[in-house]
Image (tube, rainbow over all chains, first blue to last red; front, side):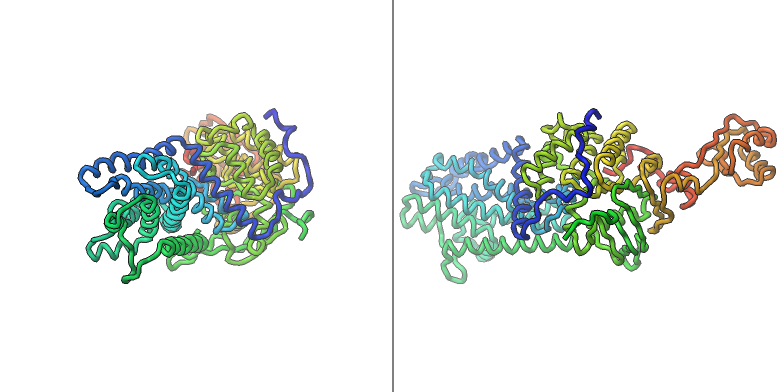
Length: 292
Length: 330
């Protein structure tokens, strides 16, 4: 208590600090601040960063190499190459979903309250959480992307950029799903298993680990109902189109995705994901507004 | 739009909050009126379940009242919610720091949420960290902080955006006496150097003595409101506590000879009389019971509380936080 004289100077009824901005600018700034916290937290947590980096490497090299010995892709395309886009998507899947349900932690450890009483809207909190989680998850995949050369994929700037774009969209989808869960689920003990229960089937039904052709009807329907399919398929499409494949390989490894016989273009697939994602974030914000 | 410079910091009229739990409607706050002048330190006392927290939550715009109005820093807590929020600082009973971030990062996040410019944020973060003597720990993650340090940081954070009213809900709960004293020292500094209004709820009666005015809440109603001094003198009785060889006999004799009802509180025979000093000699001559000790106390806020709510604050807390400093909510 040697610091009394440095305390705040006396001013009668001081005007509050902070500018009064237009609503939109204020909302955007609040979203940005909430989002940046997710990145700061990641930087602070070295152990989390390391596990995030190791997990996908494990997938591609250990699982990929192991499975490659029994899976014959035929021709020049190795199983790792085929698997790579799927592993990329899978690696962001978990990070993104857990970033989403970190809202449950925020609630449990009290920090959510700090955000709830600030002069910002609930939507800004939700958007900030979703975008922050998506950026964190996408950042994780960059390390894996740096390794594309090791599985025979060329370092093409346009390909890499396109993949990052897809990954961000996929991450946002999963974070939004996690956040939506968190608006209803109030305890960590429930949030963890529920999110696992949701992520695992989404991963398996997305074609991340096997081609979505020649599947039994029930499985084919489920893959088409899974929004993650429309992230994985475009990524695989982009990757394989940068390799010189024979028509036969093309057909076997990259089956066309159809809706009632209509061949769905990559652009429409990505648009579908974007629309679903926007819907999820909006829904999460609405639920959050009415329940918190 | 001007800030209400000369008006009261808090003005509450007929504030009511009803909850529905199943089929029954609980009235947690029953139409209370309050007025807190700018620059005052205002204490809000009452047992758990009295409606203190609900009231503070309505004033802080966390909950909407069922009916009635409240104006804080000149703005309506429902219609001008964000205006109120920008002008109030909050320190909750429950810890609300991000433990993974450093002290400075926590403060910066807050400054940015409240829309402070970079320069203002830098300046205020320095000032508030100095004030709570945490400047040398600014780059440590909060995880490493003790309970007292976390609480100091939370107070600092509540002040970052230079609020006009600072709300503190049980700011010293679960802290050791030294830290409690330190926190009150900060609050006194604050009052001395700024025009800030401090609204504080507490279980600790001795802390209520720090306040300019106090209100005691019980059963959703404000039962009494005045300065601590006025409240104490309004009771106008001294309290005598005796340790005797035979409490029952002592109580019977006191009733017989002095015409006063005595009771046993905390292992001592206690009675209230107008002038304690004059009664003590009579106790020795007239009781005929071995007296091992006698204490006479002038009325305290505990007695005020007892008088207006019918129980001591410890009785009403049971085994709650006031009884054990370690039982506080986290």
